Image (tube, one colour):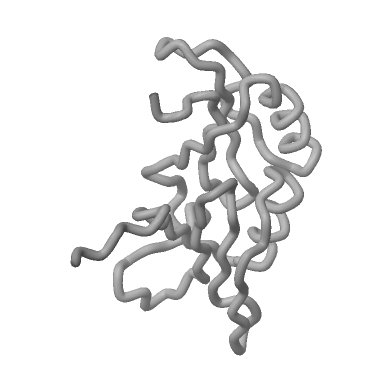
Length: 137
């Protein structure tokens, strides 16, 4: 008998200089739920947040990271963005909440060329988040 895949098969892992502050921001600004936290000598080393049915991993930035992963603060930018589904009717309020919590709105709520509404926001360490009504159609 074959193993059935879990409900989620891709787990994004974002690197932060301060994972505790990132966790607090993601909960306050985006309404994510804190799921799991691992403390270490320097504070939070690893955490997980739940965005709807999906988990996102947060990891502390280390100079000697074996994969070369670093916070956008250390890199001077990022090479990726996460896209998270939000109901179309909630996007304007979601953006207002993110901005009030200190998120930097990069592209306000708009109709995208793909036919969905969305906005993009950078968190305090520069990770880029797009919130969209796109539901994987």
